[in-house]
Length: 74
Image (cartoon, rainbow, N blue to C red; front, side, top):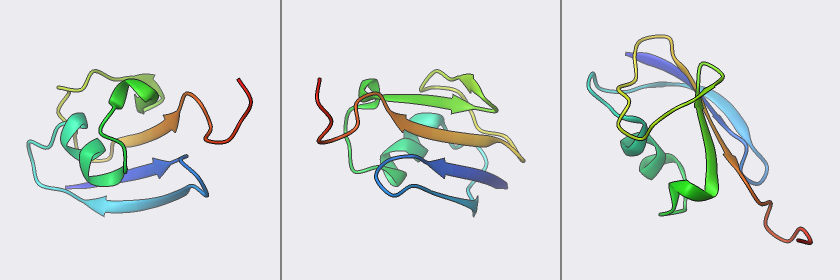
């Protein structure tokens, strides 16, 4: 199935990806990011916050946005 992945980490990008049926938000997060810590990201599916066990569906739009930008002052 095809989804749109928006990665706002670093330079950021958006691209369509084909993923297997039954893929969860957590599985895609682990494939797409360099971070083992999903709690450091705002993860949204179709512009709504998403739990890690949510199954992705055809046509979903998923984004990964870090809650703290690396190198930014606290």
